[in-house]
Image (cartoon, rainbow, N blue to C red; front, top):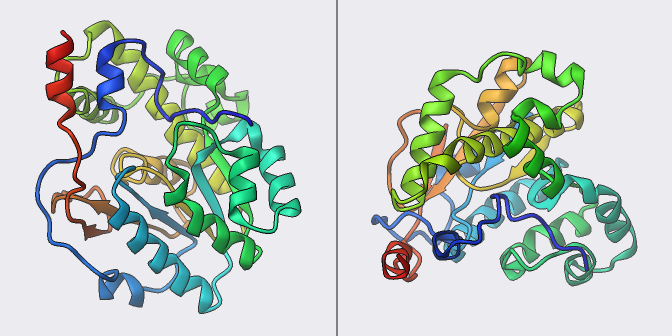
Length: 284
């Protein structure tokens, strides 16, 4: 079995272990079905669907939203953060040779993700013959990015398209730094922040590039809420190169904060979980 990359640089410290599956801790009202506005909206060329990785309710609501659209006739490709892009050949073989999602997960899945949460989406893709596309940055490229910068994982054409020969936009860097520091309980060593920002930005650009590569077919992205943000995430980078594409972003979040991050939000009840910051403080 091939292990998929976690979506974050693996850290050996107790800090990383404690925050691996952390999400927002603020409140939200439970919902038994996707918001009516999400179901009624027309299908865009690109639909970015976020997640709090361990929030089971969010996974169920997102699947229901996607299922209803697909059963109504929509046939998008499904790009998934959970598969490393370097494993696309393996994903293709699994999708052709597997009768159900359990088989795909056995062939391609790794230890990082709670695959039972993604089983319905993968099964939907198999049932309706929707291409599954690997969207995450590979381990080797992530290490290279941390060491050599964002541009190091891209070909010259992409470097030029996304203007990676220039410094990253300050607003993007500042917002990413804030998210990374806050997400690590404000206890991340300063020397690690720059590399983690570069890796996060590289993932966003890779997902934007992979989404563009699926055109003219419509695309759904399954990824964390940070990636589907339109102000600094995948939507931002798509707009830098392909502003004519219609992109809609939906955040599945445990609070009501939006501030232009998403076109729509689906509020979730907070998932019950241990306080990761408490664990980090005990380890220090």
